[in-house]
Image (tube, rainbow, N blue to C red):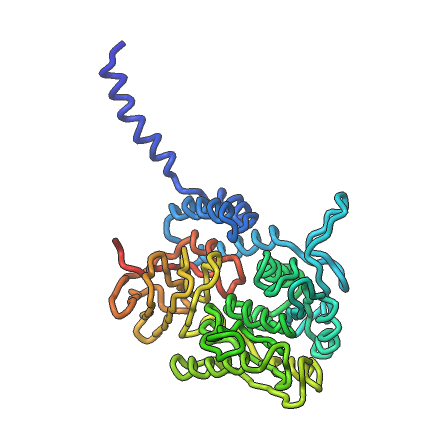
Length: 429
């Protein structure tokens, strides 16, 4: 055998083999990848790992043209819609039900307008350790929801703990329930609201802040974000992280009875005082403070309708020019037009768009490794050079590329938060 000839042929064939392995997915491959991606849950470590592998594959696709972006948006949205859950029926329902095993989980009520709802509200019940029932919030809010022409979702916490709305997967359940309602009914994504009484008031503060980019407004009643006291029964010295800063672009309609001894007024009063301070510093933070000097741990004397009417003219601002974000959840990677691969819990991040200069300026008190700015033609002129600076130092300047992978990466919520571009907001190493 002529080994020199064999070796030469291998030298020629090996690069061809490597090239074949690195060939990017073709348009005919994309639908299957979109479908697989949306069948995974990015909130789990395994789901996010597998989604990341798909994104890495699609990152090899050459930059898209504007017309390709338009087409890919539709295809990705269609794939997400097909893979997602829908809701069936009205009244008392279960999100997960195995008739063979005779098991049910994820209890909720669905009530109100289903044909052309003017808005969607998630109403969260009160309770605590070993207590809480979605029938109570349904009874409290359903009539008001019908009168407003809204659709109402009334979920029950999965496990009845002291902070049930942020424990044991309930937060994820609420988001999945909203997503299913959005697929099932013709709901304006800019008119989705949160409300709740007592522990549900706490839930509307917490989930409203963690996912502020999803809501138009929140309406907590007799509930507040968790305060930190200097001693039992003492003075409030702080409010739990990851709540108040995030509410810059979400209207807050807070109700509190001043004779309440179960959820004392000091917690909501301190939260609103701090919102006012944040407003002075960053702008925004619109809120309504409604206090009843004669009420104890009850809903307003005028009922839920009077409270919810404070929300009817409020719409979400999906692309605000300033975003303030204090991350709380490891799996909440996208917040408005920001993406953080591994968000730093408790970091204080402020990001500003300047359309006139085509720049984004960010300040952060923690390292911003893995932080990206999400862009498209609605945000800045992506056909021209874009500049991103962090803490006064430029970290990116250039004309960004329209990427298929980023369209898919940001397709987990709704079309308004889907972007074709991402540019780094951290210094290259």
